[in-house]
Image (cartoon, rainbow, N blue to C red; front, side, top):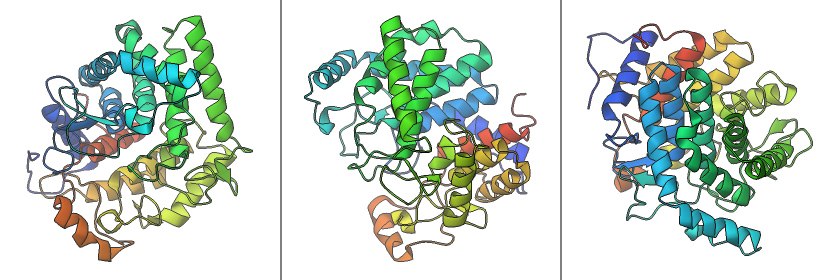
Length: 378
């Protein structure tokens, strides 16, 4: 599907409005947000993580019904796996955790199945991000959280039992590590699960304890901090652009705090060229290009640290990546870190995903953050 063509490059508010309309038009009847309708490796699947950020953008833009349909879909996926979650929890409590392959998947088909193709599936971040997005939505729109009570309970049980396990990161890589952005997503989700007020006392206590433990690793003296900034994973001295969410949108480490400011500065110095942001320095996926959604995450962090001017520069760059039809890509081939690795990915999966709904969502979310979303709520 393409967006309406106007014969000129759309303004930021226009592109934000078109992005909201594109997301709404592609949302599955059952509530799932497709990652990309045409990219071979993503078509037919919805991620809890990506979808949660998409739902938050739609909620922030006033599209409450769309966000709630996604939350309903998440709840259905979780409730269908209540027995498996109970097994994961029981095994963890017995000191014999289940193998990674028996943990919940990170993406599902629109009808809630795991799918048949192999994937780098064990990721914990999505089960935190959907709780975070739900909490933000309930606070924003006054929705009744009891509608999702059972799914919230299941998510909390799963995260309390598993929060400190190594798993794949946002990028389906490095499964041997505990990733700081994953811990941030979990901490934010547990925080919001408590704020929703639907947990019984025992679950509330367990969620609060797990949140404190996760946050301790992200504090100034924690293993997730090196040189005064957040690190890519525990024990690393590198950074990852996903950290922009931890110090920005998720508000786990406040953007204006010394740790938040130092992390933003390191992301600018190490991963940003012009206004485009790389995932991390060793990235080779499609040559390691720049991701508009990551420029938007960093822009939100800047906005919350008080630098709206820098945030608008990053937003303008993200908007500039849209094609003539207004479709935004996953990444662009500017300032490639590993140009010799492009062909292997094109041969494997075809051209870069475009449109990527997560890219559209983050542009929409940053536009809302800055008040540059005129017309989106109409």
